[in-house]
Image 1 (cartoon, rainbow, N blue to C red):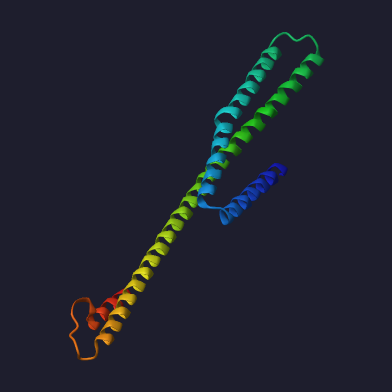
Image 2 (spheres, rainbow, N blue to C red; image 1 turned 90 degrees about the vertical axis):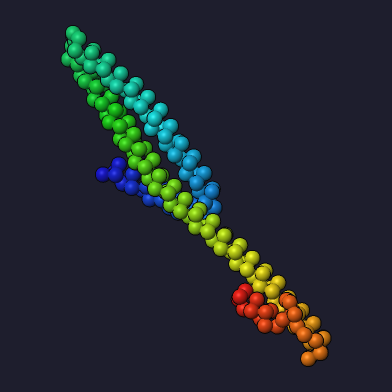
Length: 180
């Protein structure tokens, strides 16, 4: 039961850390952090734990060979049995650690997917803000053209000249409305 509580506490702590870094950091930093953790877990799962397990298994096999050989006293048998039990417990612990590391690596995949979604959303938001800024800039330009054309129209006098081209008030108003 204590082992299960420890695993649950580690998982809850890990989840809190990732949520905090997701809320306070950039998606790129979170992806880099996750990539580093995945690389560490991969090294642990593929190199360290199998190596430790192989060493313990070889040691267990050698103890089994000794037990199968001629033993002279009951104390020798007890000592060797104790060693076998100790090694078997260590092998079980390593196997449990390997399973935990594999489960943690699989959990990291889901977090990377969520971080990728967050990165995509941030890019879309930046794109929308840039588009809005371009449209505001274009709107301001058209308003300026409309106001300067209106001022020229008033400066020419009412009825004194004819409006042609881009100074036609109707055309300018249509341009203005299209930018809104």
